[in-house]
Length: 117
Image (cartoon, rainbow, N blue to C red):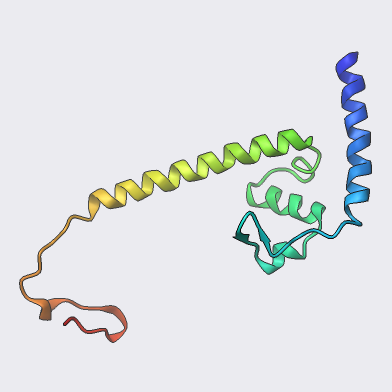
């Protein structure tokens, strides 16, 4: 019963927060020194949640309806998953690229007409 009361209170406060937040002017160009793309700068809170749902192929309003801490937690996990894959690919590519010594530079082809000196 106590958890139910807390959840209902948070849900009500969340609705009030969303309404009040819509009147607030937020910094949109850079957040934590990260340049935010123009399309994201112009999206509403709801549109941003819909974008996340679309990108991860989640049913409509599933991300929107999460509590704030749940949104942060799921985004943290998704960021970890994405970075783990990126780091794994980086190290796999690094292993594949072995240093080669070039004896004859004239055989090197550089894209877009560059020249080897």
